Amino acid sequence: MSAIFRLLGILLLACGAGLLAYGAATPKETFRAPFGLDIITQPGEAIAYGTGALVAGLLILLLMGGKKIESAGKAGSL
Image (cartoon, rainbow, N blue to C red):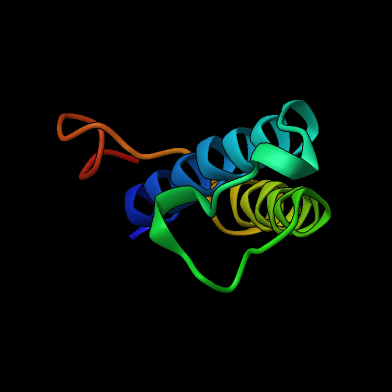
């Protein structure tokens, strides 16, 4: 289960960083909605969603995915 949380956290970090960079680098006149999402219409919104995804990814990694995965050989030994 922690592997799923790690994957979700990493995906959120990657999407958040991409949205944040795209919103910061694109001028308002030439801005197009990333990924075809019509809910993001301005660079400021892309920055806001990117920041939210980064924070969500960090929280998932820190709170849910911080546990170590035991290897198969050590799972039964004490």
